Length: 59
Image (cartoon, rainbow, N blue to C red; front, side):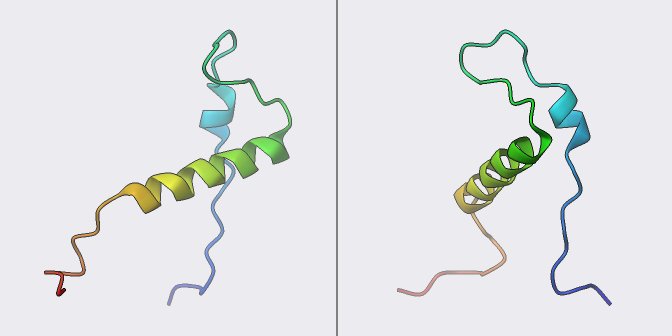
């Protein structure tokens, strides 16, 4: 039995390993804001992946 809505845990390792002096990414010190940005990027990565579970596509 899995719950309907599974909540992702706080990405502590990603939060602690943010680049300090990077021009590409901005350091986010607020944990709540970091989680929002991290979840958004996770969703974008998931949308960008190809899904092979559907099988052959019918047009």
